[in-house]
Each structure stands twice: as structure tokens, then as C-alpha cells.
Length: 223
Image 1 (spheres, one colour):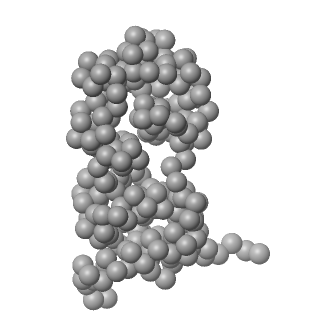
Image 2 (spheres, helix red, strand yellow):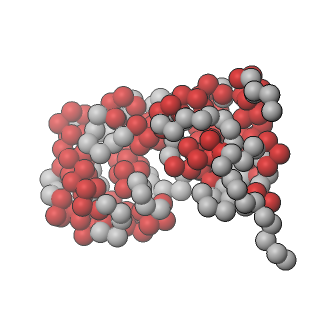
């Protein structure tokens, strides 16, 4: 097959997102939150854990620690019981306590909107910072989690493995106004259809635009 030009890849990428949006116009973040702090805490907890599991523990956590000041006064041992069913809960409890202290000491108890400032907070990586910033109207971003990275490679939008490099590749394929939507749609599609194991290509709305890189079996289930 001839090498795909950047222009052709961008056109295909935008066609994929348009098709996904038509199929899943309701796509949105699936973590429950009402304040910037709740969003930040929820995204931090979601690493290596399902959103459903996070949503099960956050109501009690948010009620007990509604502000950065309350969080800053907590010890990891006090936080652990609230999140013990979440993966890596001990490390996350430490990060939450440090996060509260950092927000109080450096930001007056408020969650900063800029991605660069968010990245400096304890336990907050590039992806988490991007998700929080773009949802709060800070910096535009195309954060890359496991779903976005997997689909970007499978769809032939990049060959990169590093999340930061994948994000840069995706940003180059879409107009900035489509980054937020593209991020969310790829996550939804990855969770519902384009699974890591046994992707359901037979019911994929973008199958015609996907080279299915790395996919070995795409058999339709028997009726």
C-alpha cells in the first residue's frame, strides 16, 4: 500500500471522529463531579481503575473532604478507607493528601486551570492535567489514556507509543476545536466497541476507515 500523506491521514481521522460523533453524540466524561476539585480528585483516582468504581467511592470522599483545606488536613491513613476499593489506593491516598496541601500552599485552595500548573501538583500527570484543564476551560488538549493511545495506533493515526507523542500526533491531525470531542469519542469507542482484546469490528461504524493495525481476528459472532 502507498504511504499515506499527512493530508490524507488528517482527512481520514476527521472522518472517523465525525462518524463516531454521529453514532455517539452523547459521549462525555463518565466520572461524576460538580466542582473543579472533585473533577481533579476523580481523574487522579481513575488511573488503573474503572470510572464506575471511582464513582462508587467519590460521593463519600467528596462529602468528607469538600475543599482543598479539608483535604490538606487529612492524613493518608484517614483517606484510605474512602478509596480502599480503588486500584493503588495507598499511593493515591498519599497523593490526595499532598494535593490538598499543595493547592492550599500554592493556589489559595483553588484548582488552577492551566495545564502546566496542574502538572506540577502531586500525583497529577500530563493526561490528568489535560483532562482537568480542558473540562474547566483552561488549555485545549487531546489527552491520551490507554483507550486513546490504542485506537490511535490501531486506526493508523500514529505509530508512537509515548502518550505525549501520541497527543502531539493527534493534535496535528485535527483542528483545535475538535480535540475535546475527539478525545471523548475515542474513549467511548474504545470502551464500547474497539476493545483491547477482540475488538468488535463487525459493528464498528468506522471500519471502512480503519486499517485495523495489530488486529488479528475480527470474526462476527455466530447467530
